[in-house]
View 1 (cartoon, one colour):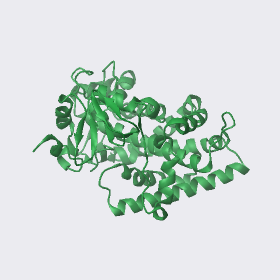
View 2 (cartoon, helix red, strand yellow):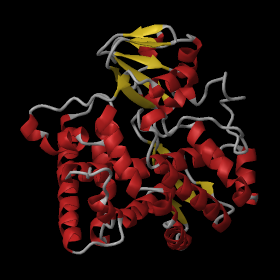
View 3 (cartoon, helix red, strand yellow):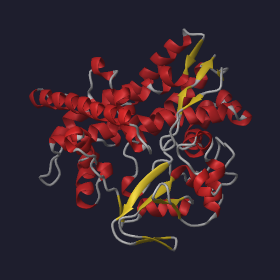
View 4 (cartoon, one colour):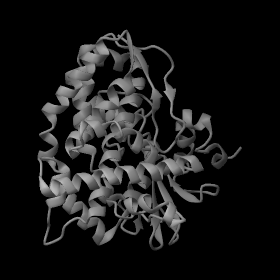
Length: 395
C-alpha cells in the first residue's frame, strides 16, 4: 500500500494516530499530490507556513447546489472573513478587530474565572465526570455567549449548531450531515438577526451591539457580514480550545513527567503547557487553500485552480523545527507551532482560546490534583477537526 493510500482521512486507524504516516510525508521534503483527495499536501513546517502566508493562494468558497436548499449556509460562508481574500478580507478583519480587540477579551477574565469555579464545583459533587461535556465544552460556549450577548435560554443551542456546521469541513460528508448543517446555519442566523433588531432599539455592552455600530472610513458591516462574523467567532472561539484542551489533557496524563508537573506546579507551568497542548496534537489538522494563479511552494508549481492543504498537525511535529517532536514536553520553549494558522488567516479567536486555557488548566489541577482518566477516551471519527467525544475522569 503506497503512502497516498495509507493517508486516508476516512480510515479509523489513520484517524487514531496519523503522525507516523505524516512523518513519512514530511520525509519526502516537498508538497505531494494526493490523487484521491485532489489536492497538494504541504507537510513540513516551512511548506505549511508558506501555504498560509502566500498571497497567491486564497480561500475560495464554492457554494453548494441547489442554492435554495443551501441559502443560509452559502451566504454565511460567502460573507465570512475566513472565506475571503484581498480588499473584502481586509475590510472585514479591520472592522471586526475594532470590536473584537484585546480589551474586549481581557475584560472577560473575571467572568471566565467565575464560570471555571462554577463548573468545577459541579464536577466536585460527582464521583466521576466527563472532562469535555462537564468542563472543557461549556466553558468556551458560555464565554462566547457572554461575549456576543446571547441569552441563557439560547446558550444551549450554540454547541450543537457549531458541531453541525463544522462537520462540513470534513471529507465525504453525508446527506444527513449536510441537512443538519443548513438547518443549524438558518437557526443561528435567525437568532443573531433577532438580537441585532433588539440592539438597534436598545444597545447593550456586548459584541453584537459593537459590531452593529463599528465603522471604519465610512464602512460598516452588513447584516449578513455581522451574522457570518458571529458564527465564525462561535466556531473558531471554542472548537479549537475544546479539542486542544482534551487532546493535551490525554497526552499529559499519559506522560509521567508532564502529569507530575501539572499536579505539583500548575500555575508556573500553565503557559508553556498550553502551547504544548496546541502543538502536540493539533485541534485543526488541515487548512485548505486554492491557487489563484500559478504558485511555487518549495520548488513545486501549484497550478492556478489547484488546491493545496497546509497540514498543521504534521508541521507541528517537524523534526527540523522541534527537538524530539514526538515527545510531549510541557516545558518546551521556544514553541513555534502553527496550530492557530498564520498570515492573514491567523485565528481571530486565538487570544481568547489562550486566555481560557491558561486559566482553566491550572484551576483544574489545583482543584483535582489526583485527577485520572477512568477509561480509554472516545475519539471523534474526524481528521480535519481532531479531538475526543468523551474523556471520563475521576478525582
